[in-house]
Image (cartoon, helix red, strand yellow):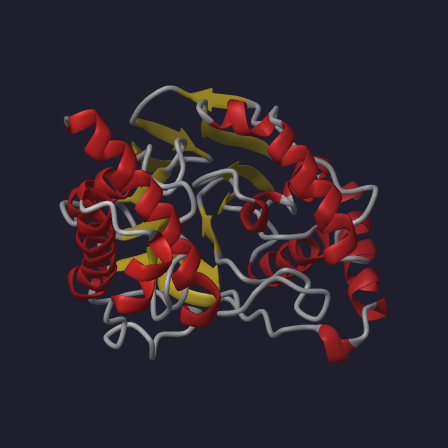
Length: 314
């Protein structure tokens, strides 16, 4: 009864949201019992409710296991409603690939429904940092009204220390620790019975990634590890699901390698970043969505990383 009331409330709230601001959220089936919703190749904004990342869900024998929680409580409510249209089973678990804002601001909605949150323990440092708190404060302004004073950071109920196999709601999930790569706490989730792999932000499909403070060398190595899984479909953290993961991961790897080679050479030669960036040929990547927003910062962060790696190597 409580579940029916909760779903009625979620449905009513969705009707109150002006349809003009809602980006389409349509679950796409990628396995016998597995779906995902695809975020936009855009920056988060009030117009899109911060719907810029993907989330997935698996309808297991005893309940629904969700992968990532989307970028606002409003989006999470919409996802809960979409899941309810597919199955009456309760949402029992949320497994997080990492603790970036666009993947976690919807967590509180799933907690209110009684789901257990699972993540890698290295996320605790970020979760308790000034950076996370300040990001949430800024998001309450930049993403209002979808992120507001009631939006909170939610810790995991279960912190994983390493790669493991979990039995969740009667289905097996192979959880692979692949950080530090995009973040220190990166996890990839393989569902062997579905032959689906959730790669998190180790993979951006059809768009340029945000590299941030990533360990790009480890990121490249982790992409190679993901190719060892027997997966017919790979769901990235951003972009369309891939039925040709090797081809799509090569694009990611080539971009990260190019950043490391060009910015690494500049750092070793003591060429100032501005000069290095201007003189680098970016033409192979300029047509990709998000290039204008992401590439310069990606290059700068990689330049700083390669400076540190160069100093360690001396």
